[in-house]
Image: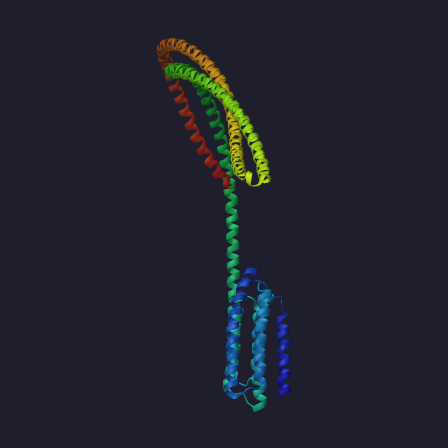
Length: 510
């Protein structure tokens, strides 16, 4: 019995492969439509596969696992894999639809062959209904044949096994056939409606094309009329434009005269204003120059006082240098005297030493003389020590005096140089004072000239005022004529724009 089942399974697989490779059929759909339909059919058949797998698992839980149930589970999973591959790789083609529908057809036939219950035929109905989405009659018929063959195999197998067909199995098979016939008729009707819609759309497009051609012809006629009207308007605009230009030249010449007069009046007013500003600035400069002159005079007085004090400092520096030299000479004399005292102390010390030696030789008779000789020697040594200290102090004093002399000489030279600079500064201040005095005189002369310019500008401005009034009257009359011509041109421009707008609309009708 299992051998027969396996043969039937192989036969069903062959039928399934034959349906998969039927890639040629009625192509009523675009790639985008195939993509959307394949997505929807893929989702529906995934739900159906889940339901079939659930029923097989429940059957296994109820009656125990068997080889047939294992084959059914593998068939469902293989069908899901086939649908997934078809959807991912061929979702925009009819071949993708064939592959997606082939998956449920495969596991449906295998389940129908292995199972003894016709209840599984219910899975065929949603699969066949999903085929209607494609408007492909051949695809639907092949799927219906596969579903019907699965049901017939169950009926024949039961007939062979039991010698009769159960009533419910016969009814189930009959329902499958009726559902298939109803689906075919529905698909035919839908295809007919689609075809009629296509024909109606095509007729509507033809009518629209004829209407478009007629509108283009009418637009060409309107365009020709507007071309002629546009030419007339351009000629009339040209005539009015020439009149406008003439009036504008008249107004322009009069306006230019009035403008020139007005401009001259403004310039004269500016000159008058600028002369007042210049005179104010001149007065400020005179005040500043007088202040500068006063400061120069005060500075000259200070310089003179500084010169006197510098002369006193130079004189005092010279006296200090002379006094310092005298001190230095006296220190040198003291050093010589101290040197003589030191020499005498050394000789006295030597004599006292000799006397001590001679007194020692005299014995008892020379003891008193020895005491005196020792006292003399000690006094000589003290004198020599004091003289050495005096010599050291005098040498330091001599060095300090010499430093004072050098500093005094340097200060004297600096004071003399400063005295020279002060004298030069005094000369410079005198020159500055003279130049400032001359500058004040020049400023006074400029003030006189500025006053004369102001009086002349006032007279010129009064004369220009009367001339400007006459020029403004001529310019006003000319401007009125120009305004009328410009208004006419603007009106014709608006009319021309309106004509162009209608002309453009007529062009768009072509």
